[in-house]
Length: 197
Image (cartoon, rainbow, N blue to C red; front, side, top):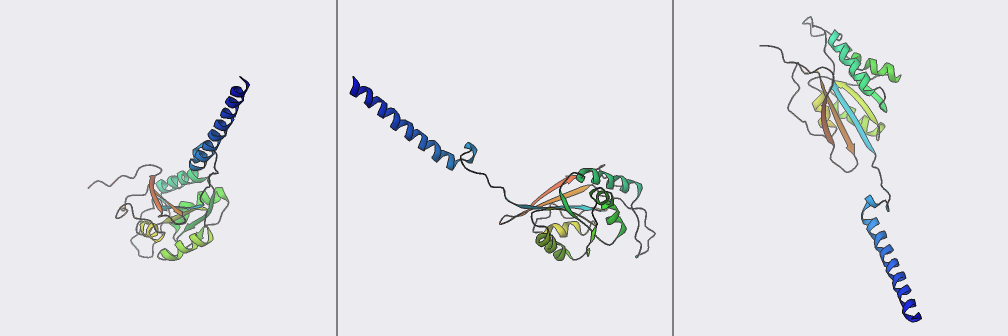
């Protein structure tokens, strides 16, 4: 009886060791088991918006209108959306409408808006990638510059153009090392409505 009993104990011990080894191996193959460490990839997130609604223009080519009342409300919505986000930098063109779009957020975050050349898409893209890698930034542009900026960052335009009446788009471009940039389109504030014909 004793030899059989000892043999049974040995068998159980070997089986237990084999089972434990198998669990460890499975743990290495499957991070969900908790046996292997998860590594988080650093990512740079760029949010791009067109400036909010502007006041009526006087038709002068040098006109630099302020935001309209609707535009001011949209700027406040943008502020609320990002007030608690880890935004490292704010960028706007030299025009009042882009700067006023970000000003409520800048005030809340106690940041200075950095002015960039509206047509230097490559320059702004390079600055963000070099100086703000792994961080989140918000950029205000124009209907004809936001989508080219998406492309300059390496993303694909989600559609051909932004119509003149559309102010509610919020584009998110996520940059990860060695991966194609991901472009997501959201909307914020009141929905833009096309003018009646």
